Image 1 (spheres, rainbow, N blue to C red):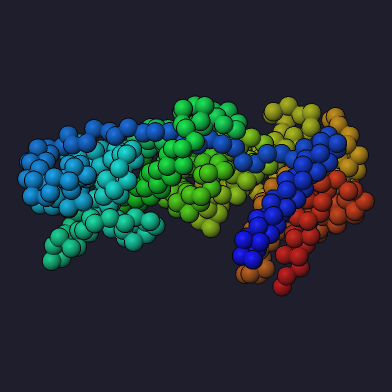
Image 2 (image 1 turned 90 degrees about the vertical axis):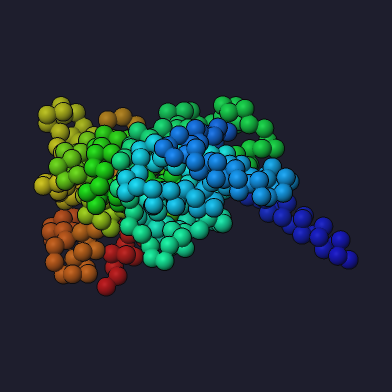
Length: 469
């Protein structure tokens, strides 16, 4: 009886899976018939690979520590000693932390670099975890001990080695932006690689049997690396090790993090990526930020394989912070300008300038008002529904990206007016926007295309939020 129940359950699971596959095939076939396939959002940029252990101990005093660890290992049984390597014992027993906090008040650049390489690339996850905790202690970022999910080792915290937590020593250097970029690439992050099925195995020669272990190890190293990056950003904000994270390097890392966020596997690191993004934006020096925002906004509109992916990347920016919001608004304005090509046949000097700076925030009303589809109204929808192509014509998917990007620009101002009663959009702009959305809804009512259903759903959500008190 029990065997029959198990068999029925397996048949039900198989039937459900087959129904899901059939539904996907039907949706793909329908979009193919329409000649307007849905734009891809996710793109593989992470190709996990085997990593080799970096140089392990080259800092001053390493020989004495290794000899101490060797003596300690000799007291263990031969079977136990064979399972523990020297660097692991060195770190897990807290000897390295004692060395860092008692030998001198200045920590060498070589020691910090060794710890960074170990946490990023060591084959032993125990060694990587211990190196991470030790580096966090040196940076004075000890709250990371509890924040790191899944880190379990016998490494004692700094407070357990002393009656009172010591003051972290002065660091000669901290990991630079180049170090982080190099480590990310060593772990398989390649934003320029073509993303296709099986490319990970083809590129790295991974076998099916060990691919899971490699991916798991890579994700763990990335988790440590992203948390270390956030800690170094906070360290620089305190006025320490200034210049280790330069403007150009931060811009490159921002693009890499957003690309990783759109990776099918990288999405599992959403929390770490979000924290890293917030810390990254705050790490820009005041003057550098003012000069970088316009350049960054232009580069962000190219993250991902499609206009839908570009918009998805912008939504990952921490808009709750002043810098994140300013960058999101500037990038959304540039994306909308690119989608709408406003004016359609104007020269570059005639086009509306979306240049942004810290002192000149993006004017969302002006950007949306100059969109060609906004001025065309229902005509743009009619052409898209009929599948017309040519000048001033949009596909429904492009129209959906335009609407969602405009909503990303305007909604924060509408929300501000609702919550505070100040600011917000002008009455004229608000009225025109509502009329335009209603016209869109009417124009889409008779369309049965997949893209039309997606756009109608988003419009319904927009109207629901707009009608909330």
